[in-house]
Length: 125
Image (cartoon, rainbow, N blue to C red; front, side, top):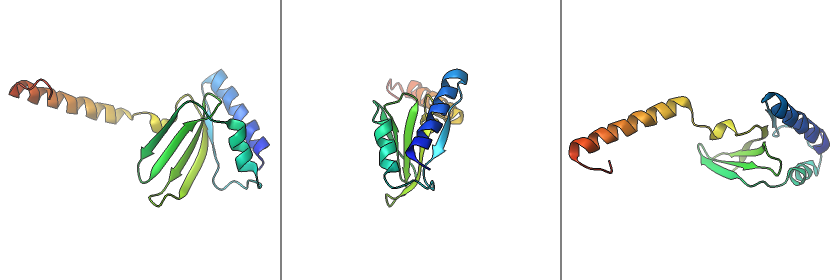
């Protein structure tokens, strides 16, 4: 698969995100990229304004490309080796969104801290 073919696929996903609110992703690891295609893809997509790094079973780097809504994700294991790499076309990558159950847990935790703070007279919890 060539960089040009991947860029056409990304363009179609961007159109879908724009028209229907539904993007998608392209898994890069395992694709038979030709020599130089990986670098050509990186150059064509460029660097955006946002990036984030998560630490879960190894570092995960999430960076927006120069194209809004196109994100490059690189997952590494604890040894720093790339274990998965993808391009996601979305307004915000799922991995950055807080799961509903985590929000519920945090709300309960904060309520408990506030209750304890009220009982002890500590305003900071």
